[in-house]
Image (cartoon, rainbow, N blue to C red; front, side, top):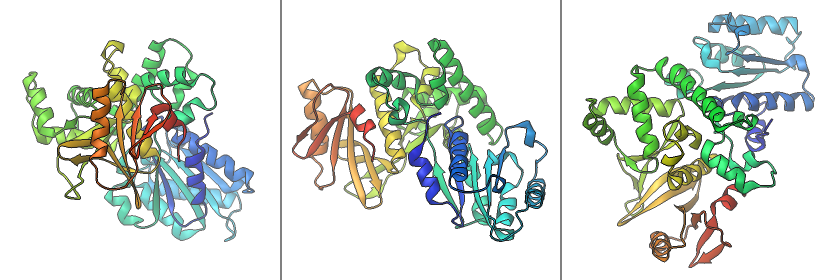
Amino acid sequence: MIRRDKTLNNLINFKDKKVIKVITGIRRCGKSTLLNQYRDYLLTSGIEEKQVVSFNFESVRWEHLNTYRELYDYVQQQRLERELESPEKIVYLLLDEIQQVDQWEKALASFQVDFPCDIVVTGSNAYLLSSELATRIAGRYVEIHLLPLSFEEYVSGAENQQDMFDQYLRYGGFPGLLELDGPSALKRQYLEGIYHTVVIKDILARTKVSNAEMLERILRYLAMHAGSLISANKVADYLTSNGEKTYASTVTEYLRAFENAYIVYKAERYDLRGKRMLRSPNKYYLADTGLRRLFFNAAGEDTGRMLENIVFLELKRRGYDVMTGVDHPGEIDFVAVRGQERHYFQVSLSITDENVRERELGVLQRLSDSYPKTLLTMDYRPEENVEGIRIQRITDFLLHSK
């Protein structure tokens, strides 16, 4: 079992605080494992086992708890049976895939009022943090977003890290893949299972989106153009030109559904000179590079796009808000902002060609401010500094998170 120590420590920091901890992320990214690791931490830190009440609502064991009232009554019954009625006894409620319970937010709000408790929930779509929930427990929850494994977590001390990076680049970082030692077809089958679960349970079942074929065509388009500027009009025109009449408003609905299911992420454009966010088009990145394998075979791989996708996700893991920088006539791949920090990143598969090197460095050299600037590449080369710009190998960047 891969330990997610950084995210776990973030969760532990909120232990016994009067906020609901909401762990979100795409299905099979490791939310249940993180919840189990938090449970193990509680038990090893002196919390009695009877104080921890756990649920996984994807199990038929809990299918009788369909509503907030049934969940509330069951937890209160457990308090009685476990002799946890004393105000000194905190009840630790761990609720996995809580969205399966109708109006679950009512139960959680009541738990917080009625007895001392520490609540952690997980969910696989953004509807978990809908306006309904925000209204009931406004100011009383914190979101901890989880992505598939980082490369640092993926290798976990392995010796041949470069070979593992090739696998990571190709199949992505879903934790379950590490348990599959078989042929590539087996890994593809695993990824297909994740994809179809997300589509059926988190998109088709929870949104107005109903055309599974169009959904796949739009997602294929996003995968093909990851890191390119995309607008709803552009996608609609593409589909229409290929024989499927589509409107921009329909595409917008699908894009929103993808984001809410955490299968894609949007990088908005930021005007560095005007210091303002720009409207569409934006860039979109997949939640995991392995998902791209579902739409393209090895011959259709675009390593440059996948590297950019990996760097985008890594910056998100490190807590940055990630945007695309517009600095006419150039474009910065990533403007990463975290509090008062700002860091610029360019990603290039290789800069051994002098023209490519000058072009990529030039984009960063034209920036007039003094924020850190890094050019990431796959070239085997020692790290260097050119006029204040750090040139670093991508795998070194991924293995030294901070």
